[in-house]
Length: 163
Image 1: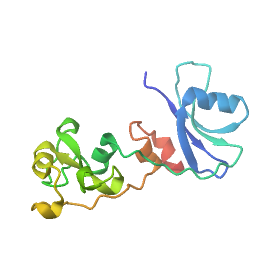
Image 2 (image 1 turned 90 degrees about the vertical axis):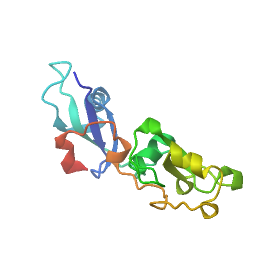
Image 3 (image 1 turned 135 degrees about the vertical axis):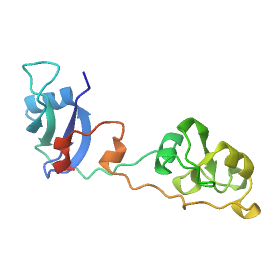
C-alpha cells in the first residue's frame, strides 16, 4: 500500500507542510487540527486518515528553501548541461563552479551549475572568459513552492484547491 501523507494548513488556510497521515490523524484526534479532507481507504479500516487538515492556530509564513547540493542543482537545471545544452541522467552530471574555487568562487546557487563530465573537464579551473564557453542560463537561487519542496511525493488531487 502506498504511504499516505497529509497536507497541513495553518489557521489562515495557507499550506505549511506535508506530514505523515498518521501524525495528521493524531493532530485531529488531539484537537490541535480540524479535518477538511480524508482518504477513502487507509491501513486501519476504522480510522479516517486525513488528506488535508487545518490547524486551529496561526503559524508564521514558512519560506521553503533548498540546500545548494548536487540533487537540487540538477533539478533546478532540469538535468541539462549548462554549457553544451545536452540532457543527461543524474549520474552523468557534475556540479561546476562558474567562478572556480581556485579563483575564490563559492558554493552558492548563483555560482553553481550542472555540467556534463566532458564540459566540466574542458572548463577545468578556468574562468569562462579564459576559454570560449558560455552558460545557457545565468544560475540563480530557485523560487521554491511546496510542490517543489516535496517533489518526491505524489500530490493527491484533493490537495489542488488548497495549494
